[in-house]
Amino acid sequence: MNVLVKYKNLVVAITAILSFAVISAQQEPNCGTIVTPENEAYLKKLMPKIKKYEQEFFQRNQQRASSPNSSVPIKAHIIRTSSGTGGLSVSQLNNAIALMNTYYSNAFLEFFLCEDINYIDNSDFYDYTTNQEAALTTSNNVDNVINIYFTNSITSTNGGGLCGYAYFPGGPEVILMANQCTTNGSTLSHEMGHFFALSHTHGNVNGQLTAELVDGSNCETEGDFLCDTPADPQLSTSKVNSSCIYTANEFDANGQIFEPNTRNIMSYSRTSCRNEFSPQQYARIYATYQTSRAVMACPSFNVDIAADYLRDCTNTLDVDFVDNSVGATSWQWDINGDNIVDYTTQNPSHTYTEAGAYDVTLSISDGSNTIHKIYESFIEVGREDINTSELILTLNTDDWPNETSWEFRQSDGTVLYASPEYTDGDDDFQTFTYNFALEMNECYVFEISDSFGDGICCFSGDGSYTLNTTEGDTVASGGAIGFGDTTYMANNDELSVTEYFVDNELSVFPNPTNSMLTIQLSNTSNLPDGYQIYNILGQEIRSKEISNPQDLNINTESLSEGVYYLKVSKEDQSSTLPFVKTKRQRL
Image (cartoon, rainbow, N blue to C red; front, side, top):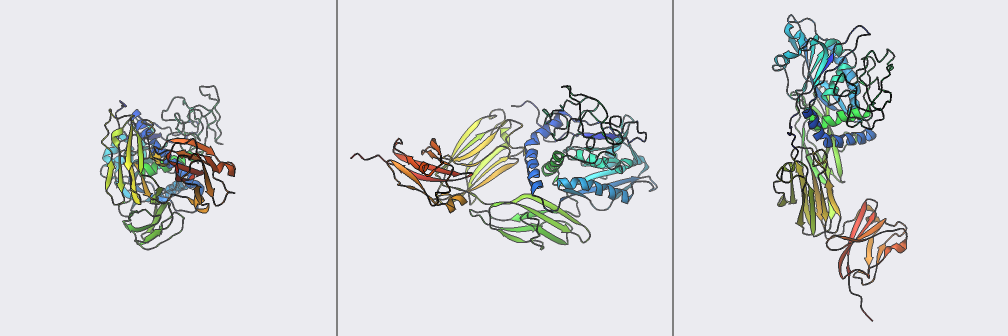
């Protein structure tokens, strides 16, 4: 058992940027970031889920058309003097958010102002110090939105001037910004990057040379933990000239000269140079939103949906969508992720006729403003077709087995098999095997859950599960399952086939056989890739690649009498046929 205390809440990580100086030789904003080992352990534990969403980001980025971005609420708090003078102007605020949106739209996000600006007329906070945070935010924060406080100046407890600071996921939903830094073109986007779990490109520690190597060999474990941002020796105005060229000569531990990106928003380069995020930074922003920030909602204007449906053993699904949004007067639904508005009624119904996982997007308007929310893979349609009398579950636990549970149910909800309560310390890194007896022409559901949401791999051990038929076919498997996986199955006495086998009818002859068995195809010009033979216990006893029609003839003389299963494969498709081997008659 891992002796490290398990943190379910991220200890606050505060980022603070030193004030922007008017003398060019003076260093521009530095950042004092406190990232504790507990913070890093928390993020590493979430990393399997984050990695999953990062992969989804790149897939979605390749397929993207003109789909809307998910709208993220900002509550703006503008601090003025007690007489109501000073403070950031509305146009400055709107311009700063608009510029930030040009960057974050590449992560499929857009920010909008939640309700009216909250003006705080209090000279005590006008020139703010960091030890005033509780007094300022306790009475002004709005739950479940990004609270950004804009002040005339910010001073740290040790007297240093600050440009702003933010909190990593798990901390307060708060950002503090000095007005002059809000309008400098990059610091607000920089602080928002911390809010979405981006580190500085030189790493989480200031004042010492990064351990990240120029050759990128340790890019996932050092620096900012991303591999498309070059190793950064901690840039500053003294190392970057007014043309945004790195002018220093610094070397990593291998003696290679650094070649940092002076344009990266999360660097300490000149603020006038910082104007880009890397693709992996955008993926990390997107993944962090999906894992820890997607629940944010403006109290008076937000998108919220539900769906009512009964999933069965067909590849069609009737869904009644329910709008639970607040403040909407009109609605636009894209219910299959094709960027086409399908319905404009408040609560539409839709029939899905093809298997797949479908994104659902709802855009709402209050007559003046429009916001959007995309629900990734919100509707899943389809089932796994199987033909077996028994399934075998093999579960390999991780270091926190108590988080893992599973159920095997009939389609009517009856629980046929369920997991015991696994015990941390006793059941760590163990292998458990369970057998599920099945009936023909029945539907089943297998659901495996992880209560923490980090799956059963890969930070706390390489946990995994597989659900196999006794014939050797894998029905479901995984490890990086987030909060869980659900698999729907139809156990039919008719043989399972896919498109290849629908178009190319498959049979075996003679059956039973005592000698030669022939795989018969309706189209021998389109041969399958190969076959495997399994015994009744699911053990593979023979396999062969098929390269010509002669390979469709199988000599079964060496097989003992009994029932066997022949699995014929074509790329990722397969079909399994039973056959009987009988004793050869002597003449």
